[in-house]
Structures are given as structure tokens and as C-alpha cells.
Length: 462
Image (cartoon, rainbow, N blue to C red; front, top):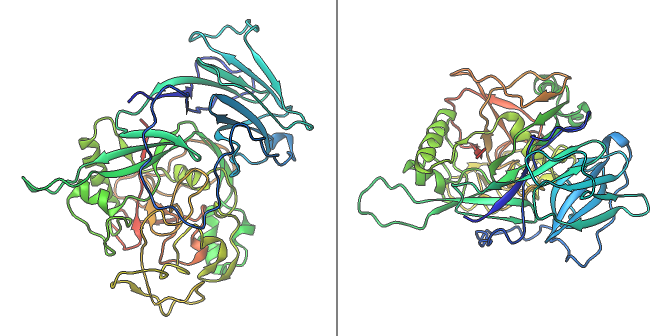
């Protein structure tokens, strides 16, 4: 694979008070893109197609606080575009492919090519200086042809070339960011059997960064008091989390097709290849991961930590869901969820199997339905990072157990991993109330538990 990516390295020392964050992207002309796998897209999703390079960059919301001011760095072909995006670290409206959101208090930007591993801080003749002002909230320059760094008064990022993952069957960039696919031939376990088309799983690059983990009390206002006391308390206090490493993440829950390709069988209740695999315990998922890693060199899949999962689910948003705040009209009725998640209020709509769960008695449903269950993956709108079904459809196992939250900032947190100990599950499912289908909601099970509403997705650091 001929793809080159650029990523931040920490070899150069950032000025005092600044921090360095890893941010990869591709350089035009460095590889020949492969076609992205065909996937049915939701018909009601609003268009997010980036405008042509000749079009003007849309205006952004002014910043409200110097501490929360961000400059969006976008790529349009061979140009870098810098746009004032105010408080939004990951705006949905994109003038190009978003590479980073860099903190700044004065709008000043410096772009400097790096000719060696140790840039000369005294050299200033090759530095491009730009500034975003109130009267002009965007600017641009040519994408440097070599490694380079971007400076603001708050941050220092160094971009260096990396090699495409060895496991990638195809790789490229679309409106959501970097994607890669792995391909796996079916494991029938029988000799001399016909080989089917390989199973394709797409992964998204999730950049390192920081976010606010947990939920405010206002998000849970109106929930039953016993649930606020029992479950809501586990979502606070809200606190800042810094994740120092980026990773690749399945853009959907693991499908039954992929599970069967690895394990040679399908334990799911609701069986079709494109549905998420379910009824798998944490231990069984661990076995799946070991087998697929043995078959694909340098893959090194694992489950995400609880912090990695919530960071990816939020995709730069801070509301209860990536679609916006959650307003309940009933236990199984939250309008914001209909476009992004299969949950108790809509999971019987267009459900075509004859072994569905009897949902006729479920109360306060968004839609009337009689049989419910899982649905094929990627039929709902993705979040801003191109991830489908992070909320709803099936709960997703995490690598770690639940950790106690505190007020302090934490770096790369991970909960208990004691053998046989409880493991966190996230995201809600087709079976559960609307109030559980939120980015911050936490639940945990013993690792031997299996349900028809419990699945997983994997990450890869390589």
C-alpha cells in the first residue's frame, strides 16, 4: 500500500504551557485511493458534502471564551484552511476535511516546514504566519510538501509521515476523516469448500485529544428518582479526560458475517449476516479477538476502554447524544434518537424476522410495534466521525470495568481489569428505554454474561 500519512511527533519541545497532540492526515498525490466499500446510506441524512475549493468558507460561530476558542484546520486538496470555529471542537459543517481543532486565544498561526528531526528554533525565514481576526474568520495556505509544525499561542503540533497499516486492504479519506478496511476470508472449518467473497470491516481513525467525560445533573432531570440515585451518580462528577494515542475503531458493531468468518459459527438470536453479532460474552469476544489477530499479521485488535468508547461516541459533542440533547416524551420516546439509534421506541419498525421479542406491551413507545430486535448495522445516521450505531442496536463490551470518577483531569484512564471482574458496557440497545441511550450512561456485567442485546466493536492502535 502506497499511502503516506502525516502524524504529530513529540521530538521537538513545545513552548512552555503548550501541549502536543497526534494528528495524522494524507498528503495529496502520495497514494492512489481505492474505492470505499459500498454501503447503504440513510436516505434522510442531511448532506455534508464539502464545498468545492473555489467556494467560500462558511462563517463560524464567534468564540465566547478565550479558554474555549478553537481554530479548525481543514484540508481541501493541496490547501490548508484555518477557520474560526468558536467553541465547537468538531463542527459538523465542514469546508473541507477536518484535520484538527487547535486552541488559540489570539487567532495567530505559524506553519513551519521541518527539514530534520530537530527543527532549528532560531530559523524564521521559512515560517508562514497567518492570523484570524473578527472581520475575517478564515484564511488558508498551501499544504507543505514536507513534514511541518503548526503553532498557536496555546498549542504546538508536529506533523510527520507514517506508513499505512499493514493490515489495511484499502484506505482513504472521506468527509468524516481517514478510513481503512480489513478483509477476511470465511473460516468454514471444512476442507475443499467453496470460498465466498471476503468479509469487509471498515475502521475509522479516531484522533487523540481531550473531552469532558460524564454527564451534568441537568441531563438527567426528569428521570425516575431511583435511577438518578442508582445510575446517575455513576456519571458524575464530569471531568476532563486526555487520550494521548489515536486508534482505529470499527465503524459499526462487529457483524455476524465477521464473527462467522473468524469463529465458524453464529450464536446470535436475530440472524442475518449484516446484523450485529449478539449473545456473546466478554470471554467469547476475547477469544474472537485472539483468533482474528492470529490470522491477520500486525492487526492487534482489542476492545476499547470505557474512556475511549465515550470519546469516540461523542465525536467532539457535549450533549447527551451526538444528535443533540435528549428530551423524553415517554419511557420509549425521545425524538432525537429516531435518526441515530435503534432503541425501545423504534426497534420494531421494519423488523422482518419471525423470532422478534414481543414488544406489544412496551410502554410509551415512539412508534407502535409488536415485534422488535436488532437491525442491520449502518442504517441510522453516523456521528461526526463516521461511526454508526454507537448508540442503540446493541450494548457494547468495553475492555475495562467501571472506575470511580473524580474531579481531576485524567490521562489515558482505564478501569479495573481483574480477571473475572465486571466489565463495562455502553450505548444502550434495541431493548432499552430512551434514557439509557446516551453517551454518558454506564452499565456493567460479569464477563460470562450473554444477552441478545449485547455485542461489541474493536479498536486497533497499529
